[in-house]
Amino acid sequence: MSSALDRLKNLTDKIAISNYELARKENKERLKELYKEIGIDQKVQSFEDLFLFKAINLSGASLQAEDLGAIKEGRYLQILAISYDKEAKVKTKNISLGYFGRAENVEPAFKDKVVEFIIRYRFEKSFMTLEHYHIMLETF
Image (tube, rainbow, N blue to C red; front, side):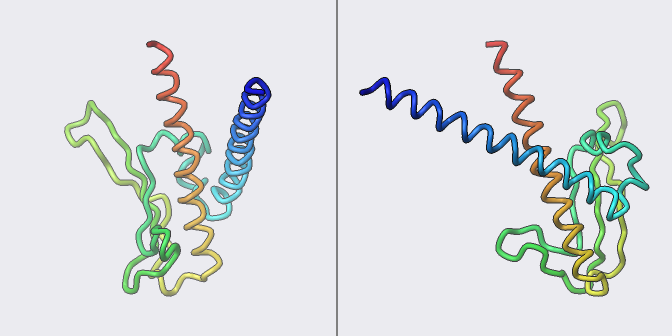
């Protein structure tokens, strides 16, 4: 009986992993679409180069779960990437990837795409971080 339960648990674990892999694949496809739709491809020529940044942040709209996408009055909607150069005197540098004007004047559908881009970027970046640490753990 225990053997059947173990097989079921193993199968369930594999299904959960494949669901994450599918979610990651779908996320990356949509992220590539947004990369072009909101014009990030004008600043970052290669999609894969997005992931060389330490992080990508947003000003002008909330990224908090409680009020995701809520406009911050008087602020400008802007995507900022943070690069890191350990050889430079100033190690971190903010780079504007997209400036869209006053947040309250941006078309809501476009603003939603910008917010979606940031969330999808962070989702993929999280997977990359997991892969990095998984590889590191293999040395033990």
